[in-house]
Length: 131
Image (cartoon, rainbow, N blue to C red):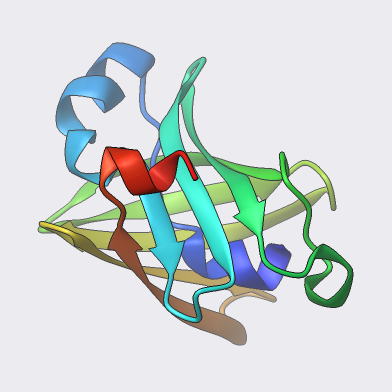
């Protein structure tokens, strides 16, 4: 999940009320560009979380349903920038995100920006997201 959502990384957290209003374009259910994961992005306490809803092959991917990332990021121009935390692996990383309409691009970096990954996401309609 970490490399998957390290890229997903990039979702957001300010205060919950500010994040709810300002981050609404990133909220929803997203399908990863490889088609192997569905993630829900929603407020969670003072942060915003990306939670795995579905994983095509959990054993092969090293991810499981319910894994999540917690984001503390702020609006930076047309996107979001800040930090993310993976509580399953106890790992912190930098995160950036940009969303427009039904598309989102995320990037997560560890090792002071030496190892980065970008992932593209497609917003799922509510009926599809529940499947």
